Amino acid sequence: MEDKIVGSLFLVIAAILISTQYIVTAISVSNLTYVGQETFYNSFFDSGYVLFLFSIVFFILGILLLVRGFTLHKINEK
Image (cartoon, rainbow, N blue to C red; front, side, top):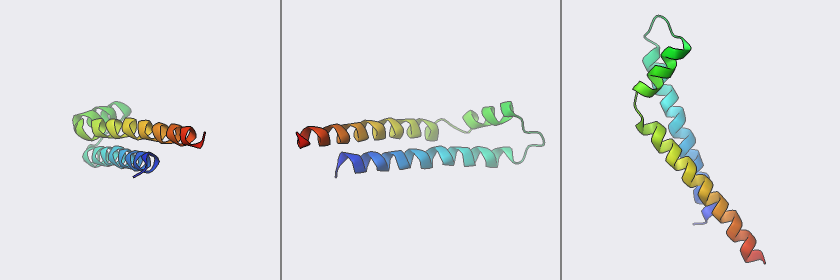
């Protein structure tokens, strides 16, 4: 596959993972009586780092593959 397509797919996967982390946090906070910014922030990182770390890894890989795909495309044109 081309690097641009794979990079775009990695960015979509990163967006899905980070949105899943927010959904998990919203579900866990929905049972509390008072929800402030600190409560949401603490619950965001207490629910686990796995989705957040995977989303960062996929985002970085997606950006790198997109840059690689566009630079190789420009080199092949010359």
